[in-house]
Image (cartoon, rainbow over all chains, first blue to last red; front, side):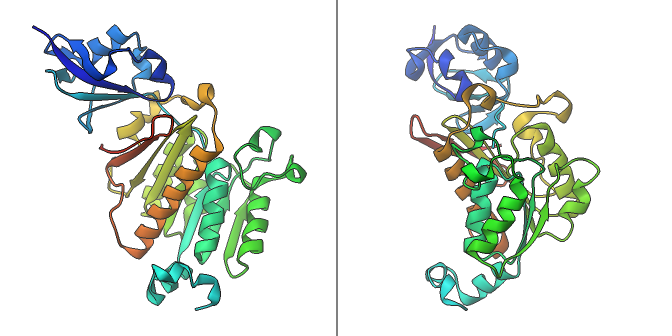
Length: 77
Length: 229
């Protein structure tokens, strides 16, 4: 059984965005860390994670239906 | 109230404008964010501006830093900021510091201010500024940009602050995604404007603030969202 999530990647992470970002298939119960690995994003670049607009972490689990945003550190001025 | 503020006062009351005129705001970093923040705060009528940057202008600043002109290449950013404020609004008092903020001078430099605006261009110094803002018991408005992406938050002394965004100070790199994406003028300008909006709401104790929230802007995809930290 699989489910889908919506993925948004920001700043330097944009290059890892899959074609199916709007309906990305996952196995229910996977962690954000597993998703990050699957997308090929270096873990240290996935600094800030939001699920459905709320701060989450690499260990947060995904059931399907979520909107996941991943951000690298940004410090320019 | 002078004619100068007549357009502000379509939105602000006389008491509001008077409150801004008696306020003291510190701007740390006078580049892409800080130059525009300084310009807006001077026009808004903030009474006293403390302007801090130890850097001098380089040619690569010309793309986005309003204070940077051909003539000012090699000249101190803090001096340019002071000159610009006087050109716009000579009633604004300025304290100009040609210094880089560090652990030794931060507490002294922030003393006596009502709000501090983080316009720095690196991650490590932002933590020094946050500590100093906590010590001074004043709010800090913090923005950062990289390419067409920008983010902003407002941190009060009792809030968890930067660690919710960047993690622990020990693990934070010196620079972020801006190393690879650069900094664009329109991204810096919009984030600078948002910083001034937060400063104004703090000073007037009105409206909703970005406390424990991160407003993110992805201009390439016209995505603007406020996330809960």
